[in-house]
Each structure stands twice: as C-alpha cells, then as structure tokens.
Length: 324
Image (tube, rainbow, N blue to C red; front, side, top):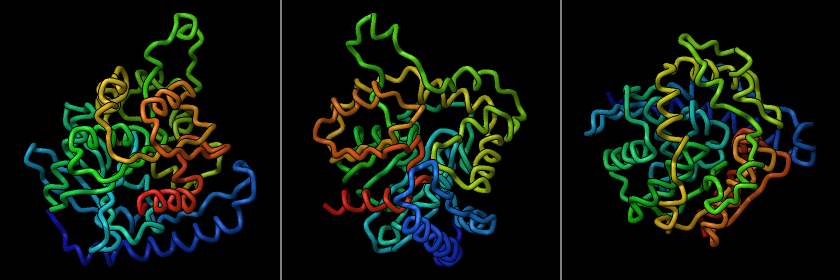
C-alpha cells in the first residue's frame, strides 16, 4: 500500500537533517585524521526508526513487493540507490543528507529489508528487472544509479540491459570478477582476505545477529557507529538462511561479470577503499581494465563501506561526477 508522499517526506526530513549536522561536524573535524583514528558518525535509534518509517512499498507486475524510500527534491534529477548483500536501504542513510538536491529512490532489493523474500530467484538480472519495474511504477524514464557491492553488480546489469533508461552509474566496492586470462600460477596464488562463503553455508535459522561471523561481516577499518551496525546485523539476521544462500549462489558466486561488461556504455565512476577485504586487487583491476574510460576514486585506508566511512566526501565525489 502506498502511503502519502508528503507524509513520508515530512517524516524522513528530520532524521536526514539531524544526520546532516552530525556528518558535517564529523567530516570537518575528523578528515585529516587516519581512518582508524576517526570517531564514528553517531546515529541514534530515533534516526534509524525515522528513516525506516519513511519506506513505502510497490507491488510490481512480476509479483514482487519492493520497499523503497522516495526522498529529496520531488522535482530533482532522479538518483536510484542500491544496497549490498544482506543490507537494505539503510546502507545509504549517512549519504542521503548530502544528496537532497536529487529525487532519491532508495530501495530494499528482493530478499532484503521490507521487500518480498521469495524462494527464488536472485540473479543479478532478477534484481535489476525489479528496479526497472519500480522505475516504471514511479514514472521515471531515465535515472542516475549508484550501487554498493552486490548493488553495484545489479547497477551494472541495469545499465547494460536498459541503457536508454540509464544516465550515469556509480559502482562502489564493485568487482570485475577474476582475471579471465590468469595463468595457473596466478590462480594458485589467489587468496581471499575474508572468506564469507564458508561461514554463510554453515548458517542456521534463527541467525544470531551478534555471532562472531555477523560482527566480522560488518567490520570496518574505519570506526562505524555500533547502534547503526547493530540494527544492520539484526535486520540481516531476520533474512532466512535460504535467501542468504540463494543470493550468494545466484547473485554473487559464479557470475561471469566479464561477459556483459561490454554492454555497459553509460559514464561510470568506480569507488573503492584500498583496505577492502571483500574485493581483491585482481577483481578491481579487471573492472578497471574492462572500463578504461571510467573515473576512479580510491580511498586510502578505507574498507568495503565508504558510504559509512566518509559519507560527506563520497557524496561530493558522486555529485561532482553526476553533474558533469
């Protein structure tokens, strides 16, 4: 059921304004400090609740119900924001206050947050098709789109299959997959800094949100507010294990990202932290090689979640790129 748009904007605005003040203070006072020395941006339970309460839902023609937030300037250029694996729209909570000149469409992907959690299907194209139908539902013909991690792969897919509906794309903590022509010696040397597949395959319902794996899953070299992370873990623990596995196996593992990258023709910004333990240097370099015209931003000492580590600067990079 769709709630009144004006009500939702009124509801979410105070939370974004409070966060804007907090993040601006953090950015001004902490920017010169090393990443590990920075203080986390404070996020209160009230701010989390207000942000989440801004969600509405759309029942799509394919049967999926997708939750989303419609915020920012109603007449601003549309910007679709897509979260990562086991997260939700709240991925963008700290960045959103800096992007209020845009009409922000911040989604919960299927299987996540308040959206449908079907038994299947969770390929990148399944996720991207949901977004295309949501844009149809909202009457948005063409949009900028930014995605983080899994969301960056979904963003890539959206831009590849609907180039006429895509203006520019921002891929944060993304991957081009393993080097396609790697030698046997290079393959033998591959190591994953953080093995997430093994512990995920061992998960059982109900998931403990404070287990060692769940804490490690959201670990960051730059401190992130524990109230925020606790809510992220709690919501991820509410995702059934079969959905964790389906998204991992269908949406992440075994994807031939290289095969479709030639279809990505939209102007692209690539963003990484150089301490990201989930995306190896090799996978970053394959994406850079496949998109030689892309702009690139590397954050020294940042991990997998730049939008929590320095949301103000990430927003500046995004706006500078999108307005060109």
